[in-house]
Image 1 (cartoon, rainbow, N blue to C red):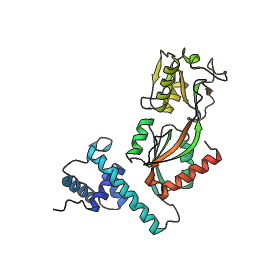
Image 2: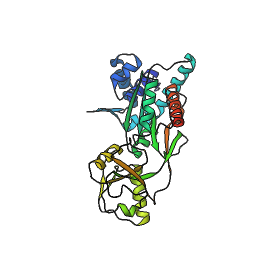
Image 3: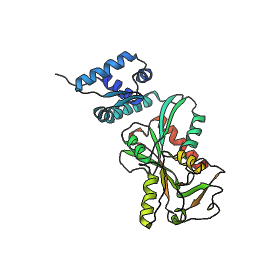
Image 4: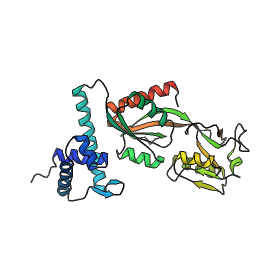
Length: 296
């Protein structure tokens, strides 16, 4: 008995996984939703296992689905590359690109510039902590991640955008705001605000606190960098964040920390086999130009 799945089943599954939606996959492939549903159901029957679970916020892949997707997405990427080479696309008029980051900057200035140059390309952008972001890239659930110090892997392509350091962020009227530099010891009297578990920032800051033997009796953990900024602006405490990771505000100042002078790389990270896709190439080119123009 031939137990090999049909290419239609593999294609349907891959695009449902990409779009997290049967209707979305049908739209991208220009077929009916019923055909997509049937192909996926037949693939599940052939494999003897469920590939998707329906949740309130959309579809979630099962473990079997995730393992299969890591392979089939590579096939879909290769097929896309072949199609682009055969058709010799000379202009980028549409498409869909998924971008994530662990901080608003430098991601947002690049995305803004990209949107100006390619207004018909649909962009999905979400902030995640560092650990989640790296997992999403590794599992091929996103096209591009803009993250600090990405993990090194032969399966990943990375491109450095800038180097930055951690600084103490505080209201402009704070008692320490006029200082040219600070020690972690200077911050101990204040509540320290850090991003959530899984963030690179929390990992780095806690390692420094432990290395130098400091104690911070009051630490607030929140979610993304913008939430840290809001907490600082609302007087909840001081934050330690990468320089220029947030949109500038006259109400905040950032001061260097003596014990945290190391530089960290903000990079683009993506699956290496997606590098030659025209959508990816167009974004990389915009990022390189933005870096040269110092727009972030």
